[in-house]
Length: 370
Image: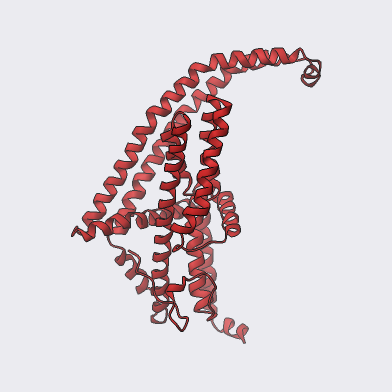
């Protein structure tokens, strides 16, 4: 029967294949643009919090969006102004200490090569002399990377500014985009679209609020702990932790590496103390912060989240890794709303908060996305 229906509608079938091919080509050729567009949507969700607060103070929404965008760009510029001098000073200290470090490595290698076992492993080669000869080449290689790194930095800055401006446009008039998408649907699909839009708004707002609170608290804990034990650059390391917590699991581990390296450069004792600070901060995050601040957000299975992060990272690199969690949130809400509930007429356990259901079990609409 289904086969006969398919062949009675060849134009619909051909159009479906054409649409699928267009989507595939768009993903293959323009996945970076699509992911950056999704990042702009996430920024719009985040900027929506202060925009709504300014709205309560009788600010027109477009003016509030402009003010918040300018404050965001100013805060980002302040972070760069704060971090740049510290990074330059640490780079100068590293360059100044390179001769002593190279001399220590050379002495160690020459001492080690007197050992018979090391001689056999190196086939009697003068490893220390080889290392000394390679140092100028390494310095020249680093110098050649300076200009490309500067260009990449300028590209990242311009991309960030563009994303903030695009997010400001989105948050200034979200209803215009919702109404435009709704107008392209048949009347039979408008109710499902409205419910999906409301749930996506509530889910992304819950994810954004919970993530920002967790980032701030963990960043403060790490910065304060590193300050107490005497690790240099504790403020910058706390800010790195603040940014790293935005990527669950993987980001927390990656953001701890710079702090541990800085502590190890000071002393082995500080390394173990810094490791204790990071472990304590993330234990507090996992057992205290996450259960409290994320209880109203969409709950994601940890194993599924790790797999999806690995998949997005393998397919799209760092950008895919950054958007993996909110994108999985969107996919989970869409599948729950459009397929499990509206198509299969079943309730997905744990997907919709209990307070969002009526006595009969039907899902109540969440607040509209704005």
